[in-house]
Image (cartoon, helix red, strand yellow):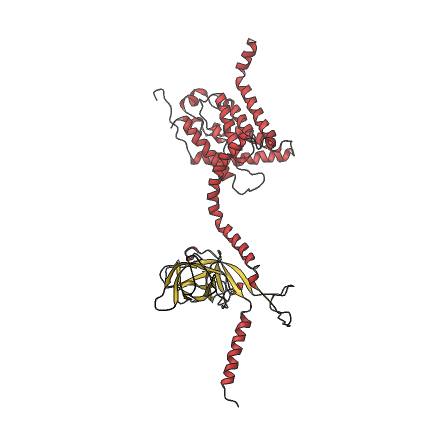
Length: 292
Length: 177
């Protein structure tokens, strides 16, 4: 017996070493079975806490790429919305090769493109945004621009080969036809040049019963914007004493102060609509001319 | 700072550097895996008891393993080098000068060459055991060898960089202090 104790005492380190090795190997072999055991779960709590902290930091660096990916996804989903298509009357035969046409008889009316904001201001009276898409990428004048959250941002006013200039809603000369989603009455939206978070909406009759928070969407009569897209919410209701209309303060749906990713929407029927208008004008002009 | 507190902080730093920096680096090659955390064991004080050293190694390895979800994989090599460490130090460094005058192994207390040999031997043991455990059944022996050598090389570079960057202030211990 004494010899055994002496032996243990003498080789204590070796024995501890071997025991620890055995424990390690045992952990390693049993890992799959041991996986959900209490000890490991408690450890996961601790390591998970550190991992989540680290992940927060990591997310910050990957945010830009992630945003771009998300916007691309949004963009592809935006193209699927039914409001992008118009149903043709199959009773008549219209042949247009230039417009995509699917088997269900839908014309594509709007196409969405993603773009990144390269420059933007909110501090001036006439604020413009520059985006990294231009005529090479198919952006043209008068296209509508929406934020990645879906809020209206503005309208393309000038196009370079690879960049385009967008007149944002925060531009004192930008007047947009919008409507109150609840009552379907349309009015004119403009900016008074003071607070970049709020716009002014006029021409909504006092007969409408409005409350704060009502949604304002894009109007039906615009070549640039698809109808029914989010613009903002009512933040303050003022009754104009001198007229029969409200003066509404609208909180913008897009946050202009930190625009990063936007979507440019193209109206594929624009040429036809333009053509129609010009033809009408010409007809009227022709009618005015004295007969030969 | 007391030895215990200093080493706890050091352990956490080594583990975080290993888990959140070295393990996050995009892999250069399947053979090149930067590993540095075991330097913690090599830096433990001379005066720590051998049993304490073994448990310190075990805790170090298990801490890393919990982060990497591989219980036992790193703990085993850590215990091994913790076990071997005193022998290597005994061989490489004359007892009177280093162990009693300095607190822990460092290029300054042992001299660069003996220190690097000490690190190299333990690094090779660590990686060899780690790779063997990782592969469990010996795959191709050549692959195993290449992996051990390349991992050891990158680890040695990291250790040298660490030593140069963070030269630990070692007070020469005298009887009065």
